[in-house]
Image 1 (spheres, rainbow, N blue to C red):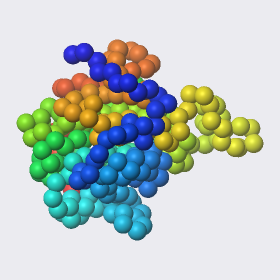
Image 2 (image 1 turned 60 degrees about the vertical axis):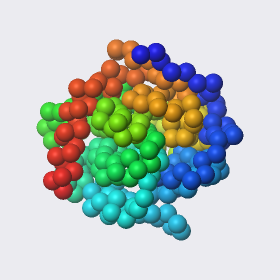
Image 3 (image 1 turned 180 degrees about the horizontal axis):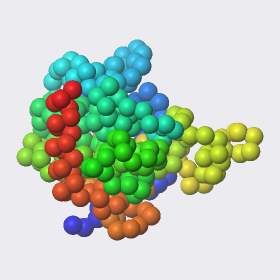
Image 4 (image 1 turned 120 degrees about the vertical axis):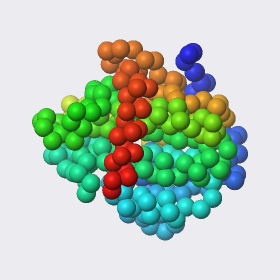
Amino acid sequence: MTRMGTPFDARTTAAEILAGVDLTGRRIIVTGGASGIGLETVRALRGAGAEVTVATRNPTGDQRALDLSDLGSVRAFVAGWIGPVHAIVANAGIMALPTRQVAANGWELQLATNFLGHFALITGLRENLRQAGDARVVMVSSGAQLLSPFDFDDPHFERRPYDPWVAYAQSKTADALLAVGAARRWAADGITANAFEPGYIHTNLQRHLDDDTMRAAGAMDDEGNLVTPDYYKTPEQGASTSVLLAASPLLDGVTGRYFSSDNQEAEEVPGATAGVAAWSVDPAAADRLWDYALTAAAAH
């Protein structure tokens, strides 16, 4: 399969992706759309005419409540949705919790929030996606997926030592695999699914990182002030691939692919430190994870 290219790059903004695109009549859900790249995704989509529902843990105004770590909250959101949905942008997430925490269902909290909650949301709204006729599922993964495959033997760190970054990486590998699984199952319903990594951006996602980690990344000075290295993107640039996959006509019919932060499809290179890891797009792992998540979602 030939890798897909686009005329955009890492510095393209979300608004530039949608220049000249009319999204009037399209209904889109963005989780975690109240801040960071989620907020910029919402702004760009609304700017192009879409009806955007912001799903967030602490809603204000016209936002809707959704706690992805609580499957009861996810079910309530699904039950309250009426009519078609043309795209779901699975943007909300938590990163590198310093200590192991678990959700009410016993899942490690990053995996429960970043992956299982989105899985329950997306599968719960499958019929609504099908009604749209040309719906899109967009999974926000991370370059961290290069650090760890999904550990089917001990996904919740019940036996192996907990590592904040391995736990985060596993959850983002799972997000990429969710897109692969949906692409394999739902093509006949006119539903496409793709994943991407937004790159490095200053957002609330880094709230659990200590100062030493931020300094090591070149993102904080000795006085504790945030600085922006050259390789960082602005939130407006970070949201570009979200809207590319959610709404650009260039992605019509494209499914089961993983895009890098430069708005190009990533190259799969075994053992690479860039691109997409083979384990993040492995169909067998995607099918196994899908079945595992179905069982977990049904049990709680």
